[in-house]
Length: 129
Image 1 (cartoon, rainbow, N blue to C red):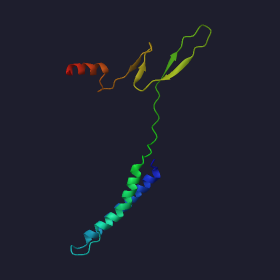
Image 2: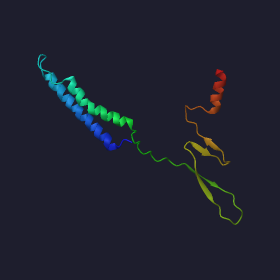
Image 3: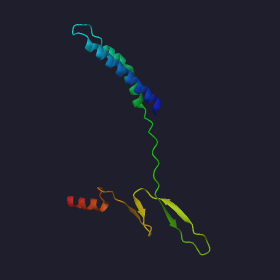
Image 4: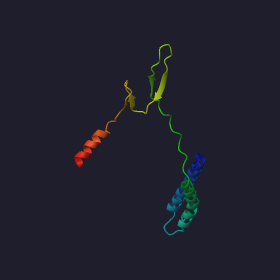
């Protein structure tokens, strides 16, 4: 896994190289057309080589994903029938987001706008065939 510190170090290395390149480009532009160049391709390649090696090293490893945000809890309560004289117990259950449990115990799934239900997909499939 790629650590945050390694990524920061790599970004800093890239920024330093970019600053160096901008400085050399400015120096080169200040020179006349017949003067000895300040910026040569071999210098750029030499400067880019360690950055390329570091990049390849980082790409071979996976970056540590940020921690997932806490999931919102949708809880419902079910009551179990008990014989007379015993306490009623309630059992909380967690339903996936976008679902709802009816009094009869059926689970209904909320269909987002733009999504098609299974029945609509079947009807569309049959009209195509």
